[in-house]
Length: 141
Image (cartoon, rainbow, N blue to C red; front, side, top):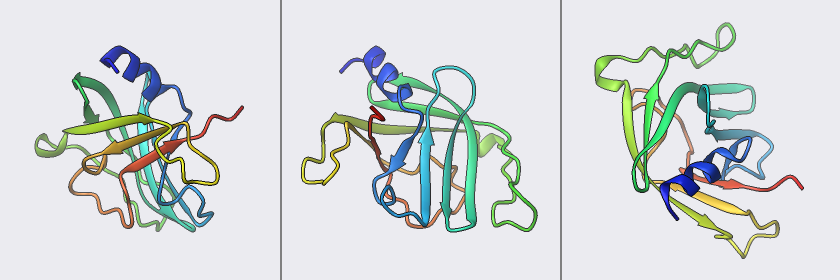
């Protein structure tokens, strides 16, 4: 796949769901990559939001996402996630990814695409528990 097709595929789903959590109603981990505007990633379990980070992204090299983190506000009063302000040392991150079509044929509901990141899409200073960095996309039709 080339970068142009990857960009189209990466931005097609409304969100990429964490493969570890997509059938667990208690957890909600996603990666939303938007062709324009602000993208985000979220990690939550039950009523607890561990992180919701806004960023802009680009494909900086073949199979490499460059995330540029943005100011991300706290969500709700007294919550675990207190917000995030990028600094010079944690304002960007480059992550190697693999994008595979029909990559999990042993699942009951087979995802159309599998997106694997070599590391967390969250800034290094943000703690997120139980995160696989493998995301799936199921077409809604």
